[in-house]
Image (cartoon, rainbow, N blue to C red; front, side, top):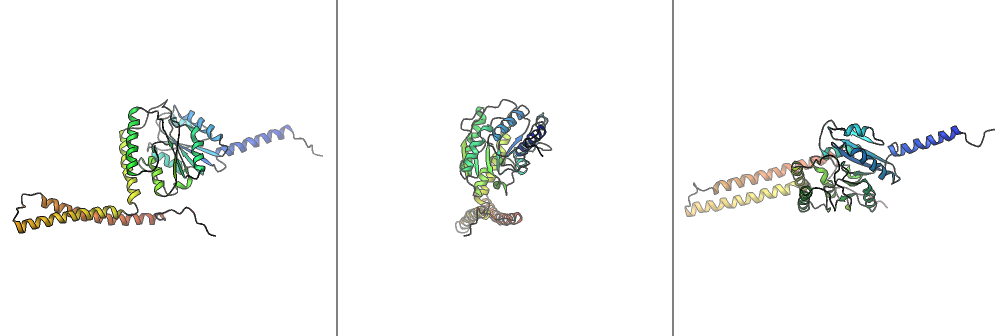
Length: 339
């Protein structure tokens, strides 16, 4: 007859089984609900503390999660320190490719239903992750952090304000602080998004163009304790160029002929008008034109107008081929309901 009471060995095995289940739940053997993606570049002084805070914040949610660190070619001990952390998925890039590339690699190699991105310098606070998720639960697809009270040096803060003002004019994505890396996204947001350049700042704008719902919440911002900022004037210039790219995609990506073709027609028409005036002046009023620059200007405008129009036609063909090769159209269907 079997003894109804369990043996110490069975109790130990049961505890071990529970521990294994708990580890599987947190380490990603079970599909995670949340993925926290963090690009890292020379953050040896921050990576350990950052990981601890992320894990504490995620465990408090009571749902499966994964932490994805992307070492973007660090030259200090960032990689070595990260290798010893658990739970963690560490992606090591062969060299420095930039924050946008690291973020794209992390997102593409994550598995969570919700993806949270943040900086690796401890200026973003992992304790704010629940605030982002609460807003996601309200039905939004993207929730951006707003560093309302920033703790950055004056020059960096000033440059950011100027960039945000320009961004509001050109692309108006509806958020105050596109430079804040602390953001939450539904996974479907990245089905057709590839990130290049310094485009990580404009992910909400790109997604808004596709019809996703965007919102923001005020989050904490802390001064940098360890390491040096990676922001400089070169990144600011690249960001401006990418902003122009986003503006183009927002306004004319589906109809480039309307931009280049219309511009070409306007310039061609002005050139033709100037030419007509010059012809009338020469024939009927005997105005000498050999020492005037206007004939050259008129010819230049006519040729430039023709070139722009032809360029618009080629761009229109390229855009159509782009969507055809991607196997999708320039619109997104949210749902189909059949009754």
